[in-house]
Length: 138
Image (cartoon, rainbow, N blue to C red; front, side, top):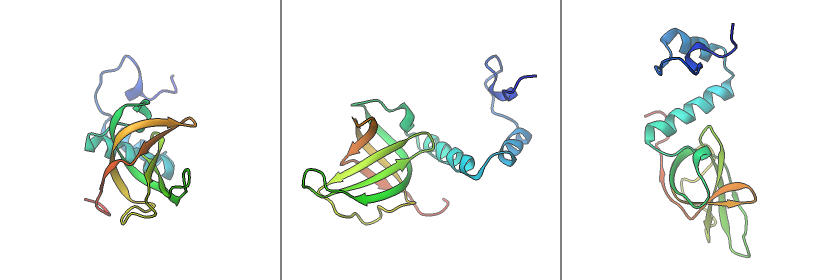
């Protein structure tokens, strides 16, 4: 007997797991795992690229939840930094020359577009265009 669920085996047909399997997976998952799964599904539903699939200098459109928002000067210039998480990897979003932006706060879901840069081993979007997602369920 294998430890890999039947719906994840390499040779199995590519069909979504049944209702019973989804219910069993939800009951055996931690709250954090469920939140990550919800974020991944939201990213897929919006047609955005997963952060884990973004490479250096690629132009992307990503979606996720802001986990932290801080004000950190960069080279003497004010910079609003936020960590965007989509359930796969974090991405730093930086708005140079800004001290605050209305609506940019922890827990807010956004869609951001721009060119990914790598800084100290982390993915970063500088001055992206963004859309604020509605609060609560749609």
